[in-house]
Every structure is written in C-alpha cells, then in structure tokens.
Amino acid sequence: ERARGLEPGTLEKTIVEFKKDYVTIQDDGTEDDLAYMKLLNYNHKVVTNNMMRSFLGSRIAQFLSSVHPYSRTVYISRHGESEYNVSKKLGGDSGLSPLGREYAPRLAEFAEYVICGGAEQFACFTISSKENKAEKLKSGLSRVPRGGQTGGIFAKKAWGAGVEEGMQLVRIQRGYGQPFEDAPHTVAELVEIAEGYSGPLMLVFVDSVGKKQECARLWTSSLRRTKETAALIRHPTVPLPGGKSWEQMSHRVYRTLDEVYAGEFEGLTYEEIKKLNPEDARLRKQDKLGYRYPRGESYYDIIARLDLPMNNLETYHEPTLIIGHQAIHRMVYAFLTGMAREKATEISIPLHTVIRLEYDGTGSLQETRYFLGPKRLDEDDGQSML
Image 1: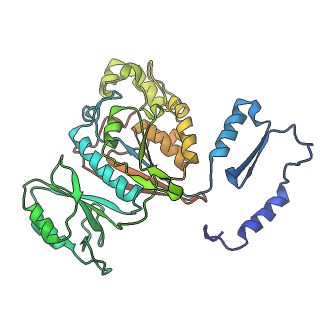
Image 2 (image 1 turned 180 degrees about the vertical axis):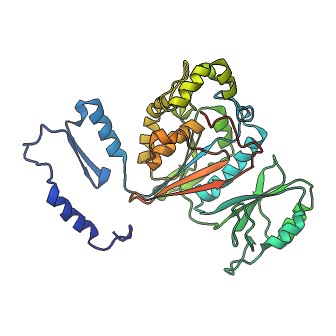
Image 3 (image 1 turned 90 degrees about the vertical axis):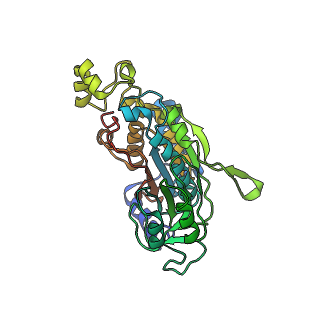
C-alpha cells in the first residue's frame, strides 16, 4: 500500500466490499464442472480448471499467467529514415538514408544514458557550422550549475530542443558521420575542439549521470533498416548477484515485428497506387483496419502476428526498446495504451523519435516523447497512409 501511495487499510476495505457481491470458487468439488482460473499474488501461483479444453480458454490462461502488477517501461522507436522513406515508397527492405545513419548513433547514446542508465531527460543539440560555435558554448555552458555540483560541463540556461538549465553535457560528435566521444571536462577544452574544425557540433545532455545500471532488452524486426538502426547500441556485461551476469540490450530479432506486407504494391508510392488501382485506394481509405493489400496483409494480420511478442512483453520486468515500423508500432502503441485499434490506424509514429511508456503497476501510464534528430526537411515519409 505504501509503495502505491494508498492509505493503510485501503486494500482490506476493497476486499470487504468485494465480498458483498462475490463469493470465491468452492474447493469441495461442487463447482469442478466450471471453467475458471485462480491467480494467487498474480502469477506466483496459478490454478486452472477446465481452461485448456478450448482454444479461447487456453489463450486466456496463457495471457493471465503472464501479466504482473509491477512497474515497467517500454520504449518504441521507428527505424531511422530509410531510402524508401526518402522516395516515399511502401515496404521493401531498403537500408538507412544518410539521415537515418545519423539517427542510429543518437539512439545508441539514448539507450546507454536513459534506458540503461536511468536518466529522465535527454537532449541532442546541434550547433551548425554557420553559427559561432565558440560564442555559443561560452555563453551557454558552465562548470558549476545552480545546485553547486562539480565535475563536468552543464547548461547554465535553457537552449531549446530539450536542453534545460542544469543538464550535464556527457557526449559530443565532431560532425556528421563521426563517432560520439566523451565530453571534455572544461568549457575551454570544448571550445578548442569546436574551433579545430569547420563542421557542425552535436552535444548530448542528460539530467543525471552515474545512476545504477538497469538491465534492459532490445527487440527489432528482421528487416535491414531496423537492424542498422540498432547496430551501434552497446552490449556490455552487467554483473548480477550470485555470480550471474546480464548482456545489456541483447539483440532479439522478431519476424513478427516486420512492417505490414503490401503485396503487389510493395515498392510503390501511394500516388502510383492511386493511378494504377484507384479502386484499391478507395477501399483502403474506406476501411483501413480491414483492408488487405492484394497478395499482402491487413492490420488484422498484424494484430494476429503481434500476439506472441506482446504476450512475451507482458512477462518482462526490464525496460525494453522495440525498434520497428509505422504500422507495427501503431498496433503496439494501441495494445500498450488501451487505444481502440480503429483509431490507432491513423496515429503518427514519427521518425527519429523515441516514445517512452511507463507503467507504475497500478494501471497509471505516463508517456514521454524524445525527439533525437536529425530533423528531416520533408516530414512526409510516404507512410502516413500505410
């Protein structure tokens, strides 16, 4: 009760109220003909009776045996911008575009500091080559923030793009395509680095450093663009009690997370589909949830193949990052938030953004979105109608 912020005795009062309307299943054999489940302390002990005699009963038993009342966090992100996103084509197995390849290292930094490192705030700020980098750094950074903390470089004012006063600079990138590296210890050293080349400077800020490492998981689809997006995420070994160890962000590939298959329309843009087959374009607009691409899939097919990974996700306590696709993440988001699937077909899962869904174990959900960049010049990636 204390852990959930409830007054002492609240749960006992709830049980008393339940007893006014409900009675427990009898243990004397008189109700053995019924199909039922008993869950003691959620899934610590599960008793089933006649549940396995039907398909529906067995699936209900499987699901209820997986759920738990403990807090957990799920992060969902689309792959970085792909070559097909640039040309606004559907489906395919294209690789990342230059902007998508810039998103991959930023996501790796996010995974290390937020998902595994426990930071709550994260921002990736770019100082362009056209700006006066030295002046920007000198005016916006300090060795000592308001809290009096030392041992790093901190933002002494809000910069925008998610950078707030007091956030610590932890990593820098000297131009596009370069690896991230640890930030120097002084502003003077950082200014010297910035003046040493003419390209842009990327800065990673977080609100806290050095928290206890959290064991975390990583899922992707089997398609090239999600694997390339996850390629730079690090996998250090975390020691556990009892001499055990955990491979951080161990990469698990699910074919069931692949993007909706567009069948005969794979590799086409929606404008091309309208010209080639206007009747299919009309039918899809009329019933987006139920429409199936010729020799392809519908959203109902996605829901069916997401059943296994979503059941597995319910059993996890560790933070999990899922790198997927627009249509897939619409249904994943709907499942995790309780949104009606009819509405979910229209929501936008933007590129280069991580959506954090945090549960406290009591049914309360908190959503946070982190835009990591880089910003795309054309926000239409051709997937909104998917």
